[in-house]
Image (cartoon, rainbow, N blue to C red):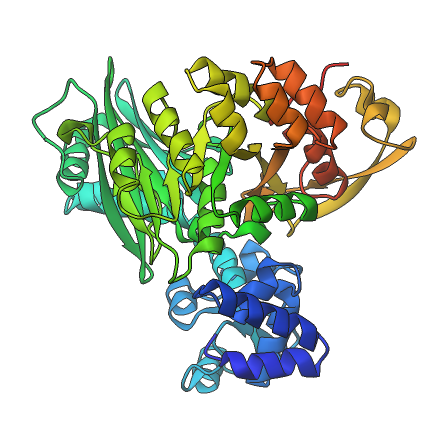
Length: 551
């Protein structure tokens, strides 16, 4: 933004966008946690400041109007009036045009000689320079994008550096569209490229098969994998740079009957920025998790299927606990996000470094807090439980459909009931749902009868005969899907004395859940319904990832 945070804080306070109490709360939190994040980031992440109010404050600091590209997005024809090379170089978008007056939005009104340059480009017009947020400028630039296949064809016709240039286009597109995964799938004479965006796969382009070998070899070389191995699975990692940012890519290659399939997992900066305030936790759930995480010993478990955001949740807890006086060590497969000040260990079965062996060594390293990426076997769970019993805070993930099922499964793995009862503090299950796009969000009134067509007996969860739901009508910012980003839904079981006593008797998941319900726990679906009613997601999206409780 090129505006000092001190100046921004003064404007935010002067215009009553935030209160002095909000600023102090942010500064106290940052000072206590040792985080590198700024006050403005804290205010945004915790809902104390909106993006539009921030934009207005920055515009005021520059002494220019604010152009709200988020709410008033120009169409493709209007944006393309400015040639792409000029728009990208100057970071400008044509916001409005009224007669001879043009309002040009930019995220840096202080660019040297900007006014003179714009007057020479739009001779005969009167120019008004306005400020817009960088992410909104980037969204507007998506109108310039050509399809991947069009760009592939151009690269192939030029016959220069086909493999590196095709990969560059794919990686850049994936990062721009916030994809979490990239798939290269051999299908006959073509390679289908698909992106997973907000949890859903979308086809993005096709590459002729004859170019795939060179692309595959380049991937293997950059990932330090064997290029002469075509019949066994290989895993590696590589990095990609875009706009000054470095993105870590986890690479998995497996042989299929059509050829070698490649999947990249992108450890992106927008994931690294998460903290507990941005995950979608209710105030009550966040308080429970923070309370359990600040205990000197015990065990916090996050359960759910692959891709449900378990690691992100635990990393958000670690960021909360990460202080110079605390020794935090993790053992993971793989290390997905690197955090300054934390000792992170990557397991390596080829050298004998498994979860169990690594965890046994970690407890001799004087840790205060230990994160085990995943509990997979009896040996690991027993070491983890004993470590939690002897003065360590243990954080881990576990594959289980819901929170209540985790306890019988851990007992089935051979954990002693009295040890588990003594160490377990809280279990949370989670799933990810797509968020409704804020740019094209609209309300819609439905009757309880309409809801009953897709949700049996909806009166169990929703009150009233007329309900206001929300949906995204589709826009360029969300790729016309109606969704942009993801939030989590949660199910918490706080291990009370009653549940501890039940664990000693090898309970079923039904018995555990009954006790948890009596003490106020709500299901994944019920937490999701709250987010549906509050306009975070849609009922159809919730039903895609969670089932209503049995009647």
